[in-house]
Length: 148
Image 1: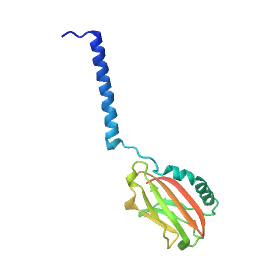
Image 2: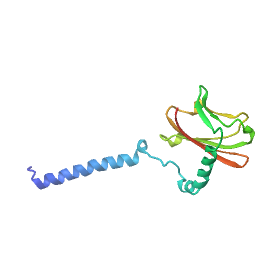
Image 3: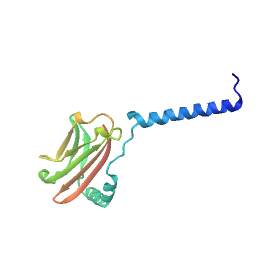
Image 4: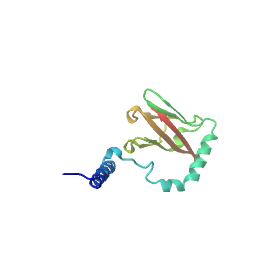
């Protein structure tokens, strides 16, 4: 059978479209290529933006703000020692950019001014730590990106 230029052109277009469709179907059905949103409720979070800004300003105005450092036992968050640890409330949110299933919250319940995030909960790699906490009704917010 002889193939003329019209038949060759149609066959080339069909092969090209098939090639593109293969990649489209692979990208949409394979979980390996799944990209999650940073937050499911980002509209709700956007509405609370001024509260978040005020809490971050309160944190910046502290004489000794919250600090964090890696230890052998995990990641230690140091709250101001001038505050009574039993009156500090809130939560610590750890966000893993590479996988939503690794994100977790820890409620703040202190007996000393240090909160330890256990080494067993943290995989090596990048983490975004957000500490939303309050002391005597005043809200504070500490954010830090770390490589564990």
